[in-house]
Figure 1 (cartoon, protein in one colour):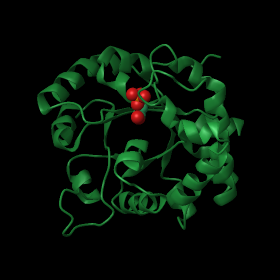
Figure 2 (cartoon, rainbow, N blue to C red; figure 1 turned 90 degrees about the horizontal axis):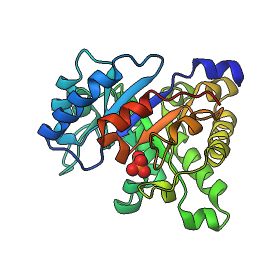
Figure 3 (cartoon, rainbow, N blue to C red; figure 1 turned 135 degrees about the vertical axis):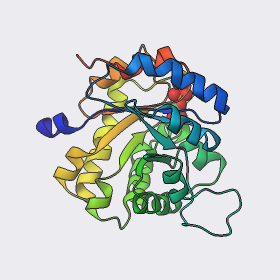
Length: 259
Ligand code: PGA
């Protein structure tokens, strides 16, 4: 998959989670923008909470930063109190949306089937899904890591046309590494990224899998991004805590993958 890797433009995405009022969001973007203006050959995404989307959309106009939301509902409209549709996210300026984050699976009962429906809704509206998968520590320790990743990947891609899968990005986020300061080693990340690519090849095709961008997430910091990016199947990062600090996020964006 060597040549195809050249065509996989790395993605560094910041997941702000439930942080930032509009004023804080404006300040974060203002601090970040001058630090990433020279970044080339990588895609930069920030995912603020719903309430700051429009504010950030305005603030990033004319910069290389693109906007994502952290969730969406799979129906286009209707009586779904508290939910937000794909079209609404597009209207607020989003280009992408995070789907199936482990916090949503853990705390809000998201299922593989729901993730699949959300991917379809996002694609129908022209949003790029950032589809999250990852095992818990108990699952890894119990020897179920491969089975869990396979179930989540098969669930996500269920009945999707190859063209639809090709418009997605995957984020492998081991739950035990999220917000814990305990990042996966580059070799641990590579093992699962390779598994995800092989699974996708078996479900869709080799060429599609070769072009699929697979991000790593879970305690990505300035001091571990370069090591992660040396791995053949690591195509970027989904960054939580460190994305709230402009200098740290800019350093992660300017990773070097010289191994
Ligand atoms: P973290 O979060 O970088 O704070 O571990 C990553 C994520 O949940 O996307």
